[in-house]
Length: 93
Image (cartoon, rainbow, N blue to C red; front, top):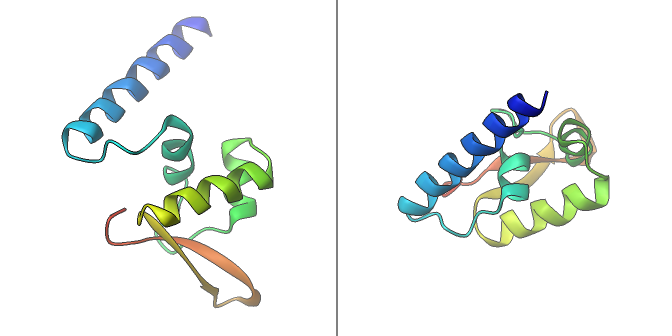
């Protein structure tokens, strides 16, 4: 298990380094973990939190940061007018 963890962290570091080299140097590991879970048609914050194994508050805070940076945006959920989906913004794509 430790060896898998070491490889996972090394891969995260490489991906973030490549993103930084491409001009996306403002993305943190926590933000990347949330962004990796945004589906093609959007994902609710509660689902992002569950998939990333963080609290809803943490996921919401992270989505707020990503939204301010222009990577994601929140849109109405067509299946439930009370809910919002997190979708990729142009910069996030």
